[in-house]
Image (tube, rainbow, N blue to C red; front, side, top):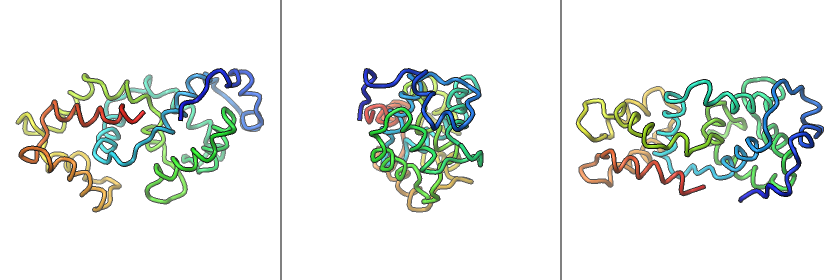
Length: 208
């Protein structure tokens, strides 16, 4: 779903919505930024298990405070009860202030993000869903990530190396982990080269 900017309220009009007037707004967030986050959220693709796992690693380890400050501010704005996580209702109510017609689409995608059925979205889950993927899935960051994954410097990533970075202390169930590994095992020699890694990661961008 691509949002129509022409029909969007201005930043000033959006901030007059009861949602924003009820909850104190300490930081002004640009309307275009919120719309971009909403579009990224609606384009979330949980079926790309390996890519989402690697993206989570990249967002956590290869971004600095300046890159994620606005996303953090948006999360805190949506978190109206200040419990450090977002309920489905908080996300829907917040984004409905921008577009009243997207409730069903939001309900659908939020269920995909909330894979553990906790009825809430943690900050890192939210960040991974709304962040500008093109700024993360770039050659520079992909090459840095590949070098971190390629622990032995052999020029390829093995399932064991991936498990070291993505499996230990993770929230992935055995079923999800097997799905992640299966995306590697169909490759030649059960390993990924740098070029293969880049191609697989850039599939996320094609989902937008």
